[in-house]
Image 1: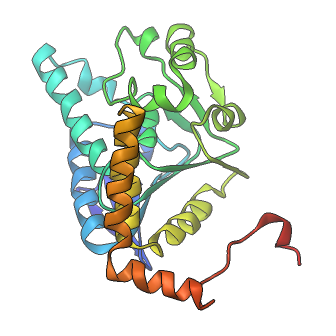
Image 2 (image 1 turned 180 degrees about the vertical axis):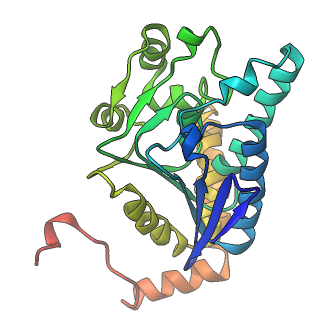
Length: 264
């Protein structure tokens, strides 16, 4: 295992990069240095892995923005910092490899914004979700008004921000903040399992899911369908796609894991 500036850990497990927030004494709060270390880890993951998992060391995933640093910034520094978060998180959301987040303990403020940039989110029973910016006199700045609001809806996000409500792991899963809910301590293992599964996909298919799918959501229906046709044609025309299709037709491909047949 190696570390990026002592703030982010990095480990390869097969084709999966494990990227860990490594400020457990600060509940993995995100500072400017953490953002830059995370950016470096993303670059390394893209070069060395076919999928990645992000998690938090210690008792929490991430308690959000480092308020001690933020309070010292003027308006220009704050807006530049916010835009830097947007740049780095976008490299996860619309990058070259899938990202899975393993969530436990606090998934709060900027921590929720970071989790929302990943394609798949796994929460264990200890996870809780909150956006306390309203109580702090600030507003989300790491992409939450776009990413988190699209996951749970603007009304639920407004509730969290206005009232200080804290959502449980079960509520978070119902609201779309997590797609998987697992037992305490099991999030990282499940996240690695899911990331390993995505790593087996054709890279072009993964790239289309990461980059075409979210953009299609921003388009009109007709524009989205047109882009879908172009992306479908591009993906299916690769040599790897042709080989995978032949393997399926020749019954060499792995079967679907159908829930009702798992015990048979």
